[in-house]
Amino acid sequence: MIKKLFAMSVIALVLAACGSNVKSTAEVVKVTVNDFTTNPDLYADKEIEITGTATHVCKEGGKRLFIIGTDPEQRVKIETGEKLSSFPVELEGSDVVVTGVVSKLIVDETYLTNWENEIKANNPGSDFKIHEGQVGHEAKEGDPSAELEQVNNLRAQIAESGEDHLVFYTIIASKYEEKK
Image 1: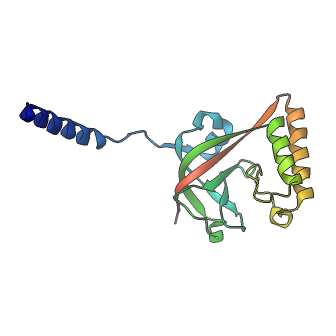
Image 2: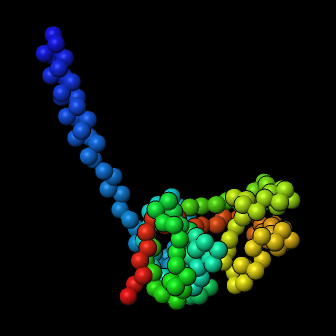
């Protein structure tokens, strides 16, 4: 009886060990900035590789990078993930290849009300902030009136859209490299 239990335990361990070596083979999808900005929802929650020109690295900690393709109006926001501490400012003007997972943020009235309440509670570390990387935004960083203006601008955008929400896409980067 003990020999049978021992044999079954060994078989179970071998099978478990073999099963733990199986890795997901989900393929990373390579996209252009144009493809991504044309229909970002296709890539939501998927790992992608995207190439573009770095136009802006947020000076406050380097946690955000913005890239463009051939059309400077089509910008993609990239944030550092768990594997990256920051993007160096020196990337600005360089071509970069970024791999990461596409995150989708839905901004509706509830979201904006929560953000507005955080601003009024003087919580500068609010998770509700939306960084769009506009030129000169660093000067307004931490300014409650500028943030309230942003909230109201987003409310106006929702009203103009005819929808009850806006959607923002961000790539949460796991790695990047500068193309030489």
